[in-house]
Length: 301
Ligand code: G3P
Ligand code: CA
Image 1 (cartoon, rainbow, N blue to C red):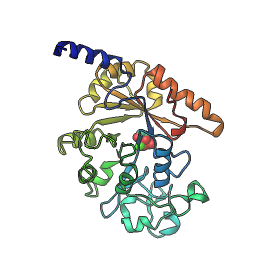
Image 2: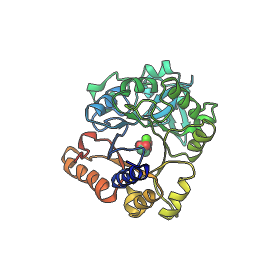
Image 3: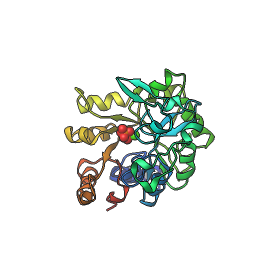
Image 4: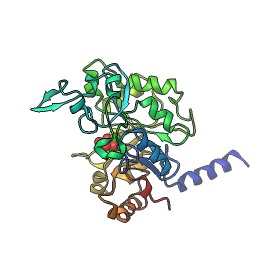
């Protein structure tokens, strides 16, 4: 077979694929783990996500006072832990509200917290995991898609989230595309500055995706063209995809994958509708990957 023939067949195969790199099939991302069923960002939620067939598991990242990456969505501890009861005298007041920032507490202190009871008594004493523990739990079984969460808040405290992230990925030999084919890594952020920092200052070659709640006044074409300067993929909200039906096609035209967030069942009775919504996003809207709280409802066919 000549190289020209081989290249033509390869091109035909590529054109036939329904999803764009870094994805290889319609992709299920467990949002905060299987967070509909277990306390978000805990090891039980990550393990359940694996049992439910997640292609990738999502950790949102925060940094402790002593500079350790932990998995948590909020920058503060009070919604998902018993910090209020455990550390009653350590609150800050922000906008008239008491709050317990993650960055005010050492890892040892955070380890004393209960991150499960808010979800139900069966999860009592579940701890906040470190990112390293999350990696150890998921590695070899699924991909990992960490989000640099509010990195600017940590920057003001002298904590460098991008540096810590690249250090831990490097020490786990997960810092390059293909490092571990069973555990691909994609980095996501709402922060353009964070993604730019990863690519330029830290020479990060891993796929980067940019989270966008809304396009604002940008047209889909202008949005994709802008994001392409610092990321490899778009990650719009479901609302943004529905508001701009041409967004996915425009992204694909410019070689950008589309990862949409977040699909969740409002109740157990909502399972069929939730499955149908994901099917419609994949087959009609044409997205490549979906973040969902309900990995068990992802339509594989
Ligand atoms: O990262 C995708 C999605 O999780 C973005 O929303 O607020 O749940 O981190 P959030
Ligand atoms: Ca997230």
